[in-house]
Image 1 (cartoon, one colour):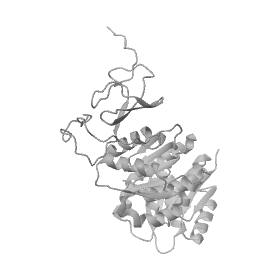
Image 2: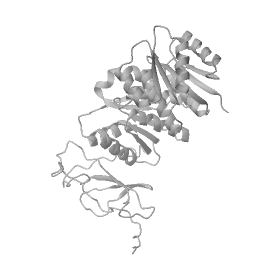
Image 3: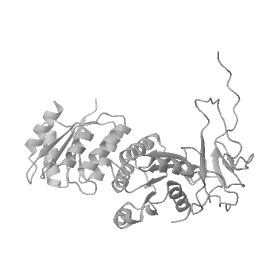
Length: 135
Length: 242
């Protein structure tokens, strides 16, 4: 049985590392694939799909460098379509409020949720939101 | 009562514009057969019949006119029904055949992204007829282009050129091009050439993206011109060295 994988995309390395550690210690993921920008996220996701990894969720910051989180989420649905895979749940987070554009993107990509946060990501909230999405 | 289908013949052996009989084949490399009518200047591609065709599934024939678009429009062209061919003018200048008619295609597989269906269809035909492409896959928006590209990578038929507009629906062309590079990384592919066929006004905003992408260039597009003229300029721009 393939091990469960979660992709996380966040420009802040410390935040990525803390979240990755939490996701693995809580047993939500056996492996975490981190990315610092939207282009890298698409590369990692395409590699995971090629390896036939069991991707259980994607956690991404809305404001990613190079390619933003909203664009990256639509691109991930394109990859899933090309690999004939069901859509993986996407958890967006941002320190900015959810705007109309993000709502449109979330309606398009489906299986997604927005987690508002302060300056720093509250790891426990992410874990709880993911547990609810994967229930 | 069933009727026997008639034996396959090449549809439209005579020129559909001026009815001149049997325009000579200037490319005869099935499935690409290209006829050029010296009388009215119509360059057309017709696939020879390889299987039985019926009235319900006629033989696919695409027609590309390479007459200069500065010429007077033919009488009755405006408001004519789709598919109607313009009346031939008797003394039109003879068009120059496209530059790449020699055997051997420049791009085995072109992926074309554009929001306009009329442009996509005409550009696909023109790329095939001109010999610049052996296969053309079209996408109507950025998301479809990414999906088609990934599918092609999975099949091992990675496009050798991507032509796209900067202003694509759903995902804009600049983001799509960057994401294509990301997908190439996942498949360990070398960067393929990307041609932005976009309005000249898009140039300044494209410049940093072109520098980031490498193997990419911008061909300015006259967005106000009719699709046939935009296609002609695309083919000319592709055939010419950057």
